[in-house]
Length: 261
Image 1 (tube, helix red, strand yellow):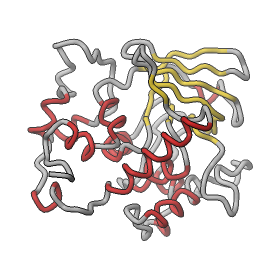
Image 2 (spheres, rainbow, N blue to C red):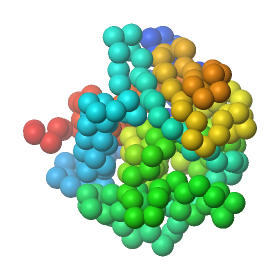
Image 3 (tube, one colour):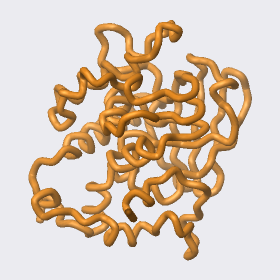
């Protein structure tokens, strides 16, 4: 069960430290944690192929034209900037992407885009602001802020994929269901970040926010209210997400053959 432990919701990690949390193996150790069958590891097509390509394209094109994407500075900080969408506690995967849309295949670029159009469509009517406007495939909210137990419910990996396909860069929640956190890291679609307080009660949908991620200093800045909030470091999961998911990271680290091999 080492793979499951690898993507549990993290506490605080020091990427440069030789001593890691024993419940979260160092990245090199992941090579022994994941036993990838040759048919999967060497397959020219697998479920994460176009996810990684779509994610990379989205982040690169946005970085060139708008501040809503992830950028890395010389100080090794990752930054997200944009409008936030605020939800409450216990947002389950059926609210994130209802089961009727699970027939969409994320490895198909057209269906991946369509999947994004249904992100958070299962929210109750009390959420009067639509996350994705009717007829659109992308949301204008690049950051989702939630409460406790975000992503609970079934283990569908379509949940973080749908958010990523819609244009979400990061989710900030008080806590996560473990399977949602693991799926977010494994697919590389969104950064699942933990707040140290109930930001869902401090922020409002439409607020302009910036997230700054560093090894030991992570924060969310709400430009609308003028307040700053401390976030828990993403730890060793960060490089996996940055690479585009576990398969992309494994190839980059030489754990499995590259596509060009």
